Length: 238
Image 1 (cartoon, rainbow, N blue to C red):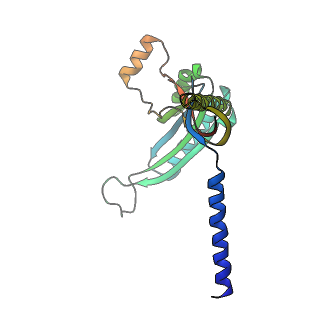
Image 2: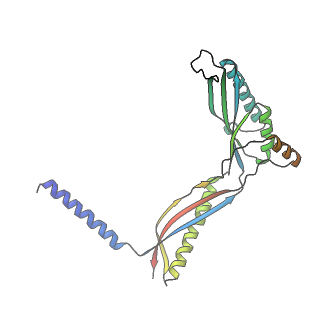
Image 3: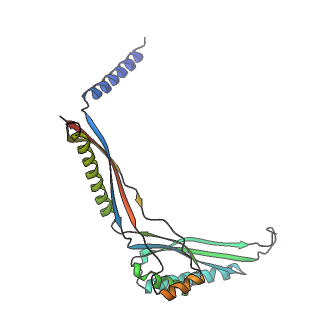
């Protein structure tokens, strides 16, 4: 047998022995999963909105859309919305052929679109700002979703609750067998965030009339849930 084959065989044997040794010295363990949740009222709303114009010439469509987009940004800045909370997210300019003759020389009109994503950090101003956005050229609301500030702080609290839940489960399981929980042997964690569903925001004439009569807010933020999942292995002590 070649020397390299002997070396490979020796390394394999050492690896197997190491695995066996690790398995032999592993202490008795109790493995549990813990879940922690923090439920919060959202304090910010993200709105996806846009301007859409149709004109006979490309230049007219572009100018109209750019003018309205500039007016929207100016309005938001005047209302105290920070520049970092206003972001252009999509721009589109294209010819539209509606007669079925795509190869013809001239389009029926040009479509210009510009979309923005804005963050409103005071929910009680939502209706006021949205009304002003309509007045300043917004003619498309693509959707909104709610979120909370200081997410990392709330994630830490959810994690703390998940660990407490895991330890409580481990204590309950071992005490039933006359044993007790020792030191932590291994731990892992994942923290998904459910910021609530993204919802379409559209108002019919009837809804507008109802809201005008009620005089109340037109949105409901619901609840944001931050969840932590942990898996913990504890040493079992007799």
